Image (cartoon, rainbow over all chains, first blue to last red):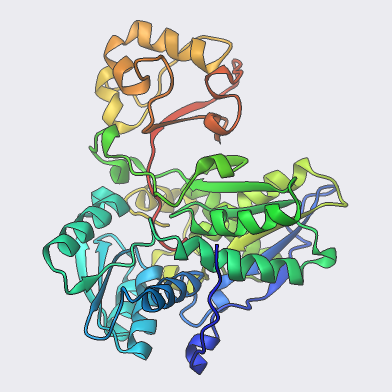
Length: 319
Length: 88
């Protein structure tokens, strides 16, 4: 995996170098210490700034992306928001395809950055957005689709950035386990590869969303889609987390540590606590919080009774 | 069971099955609901590529696969493999 060194304007230079903070109050007694990488500190508020910038810079360097092309990407939000910001700075118009069930905050942010939004059926989840974007890209050569699910510049952003930052920030450079939410697999693959080069014994653990029945919809099993950049053999564990467990972990995080994080961060934290409880006090777990809570304010995740939330959450793709 | 497979098990969201491993459990299940076999297992009797099986929320593919032990307290979840979306 090669890492680019590209001169950047101020807004783009602010991507990455996010804080790593310890979470002493959510750590189980007797278990490993837990540290969180706060990716909401990126300019558009999520880890996807790293991925979008890496995909664009690599495509520019390869000559695949040149002025006059329009960026097109299937996303349920953050990647589109990141591409829209970077596209604006670099002069590329942006179209995103997203499930119609996405939160209003994300839609508003995309419009604010000037992106065109096309909606795919909500009950088909992110798979529906992927299928629709691929059809559009095939029909119109004016589109350049970075396609985060199959683009090696996605894990490279983490191999060249996130992982090196973690190794630099954590006490003693010691990482015994790394936990992140599973979406495209980019964070887990890229960060995992670098961490494993330093410590072959590190556990790379994925937190996977348990989607609600309405989201799973009526698709056939053969419609299932595994991102080409994801090689699950590079994971040590993959743990399913329900929407309710994610929200309960988010609330605990807010109550005990004062950190306001997004849904996938709640899932990742639930898994990190499980992993940390199985390790000892001399060991260290890093969990990556992909975004903050502000894009989920309208959903009432932090204030509504959990029983009322449960059914409503089943109808959307959250991460 | 995911929505798409429920018709094959009489519409049930949850079903009981017996066995000491995931393989035995699926054998028991497919014995009682033959229509589900082709969805879950390939011709070689291994887990179909687009199906994930979880025991107590852990994906068995990353552990002992179909030989993963189960007991009377275990919850086994069968899901279609799905890509996540953003924010991750």
